[in-house]
Length: 237
Image (cartoon, rainbow, N blue to C red; front, side, top):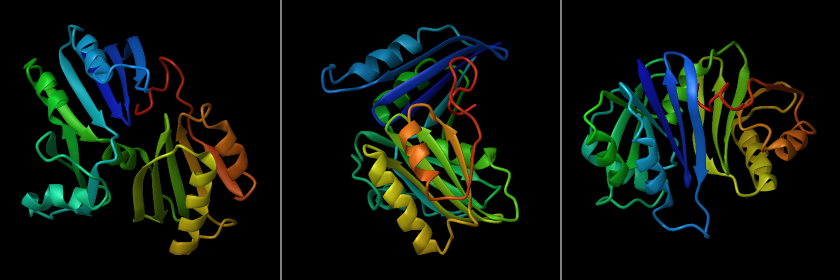
């Protein structure tokens, strides 16, 4: 059985083609001002040409809203997302992802153009939000912990007090200095100390080596859980 995994992030598309558990192909594309506006659409079309048995789609785009599990006023989903980011209701599909482990759910907006291209294949397809998947990878302990998932110019940030989710955020990282300031500011606001809090880093750690070397100057306990290595640790495997 072959699986196509698609990861959409800020101005980016990464994908893998797997035969059982073996990675046959893996590519990453990121938009910049020198490229045509439909660059990511073109790369999605290329990815969808792979003959596969099923598709897994993860959206790490920071158009989301977090609510307690069981919140069912779905008609408010797009309005809740709009508090965090400007969305185009006509061009974005409202999606729901539930994390039972921490008792929360995510409303997230996914581009309709991409959604309909993927659905048009009529292949078994699973859509999910990166925050829900990230939460499921964490095994909480009896400690205050910060979990940072690094992407290309983007990151996810989770604060846990034992098994209690204190904060989730998904934000752009155009400046590593600003991101470090955000972390220190957030720790102060939620009452986490730099000496006692455990920090866990995932994802594109090599790309953000400056940020990691700087944060190590301020915190006592820091562990790199995995680095995103080609054909080994796909960013959300």
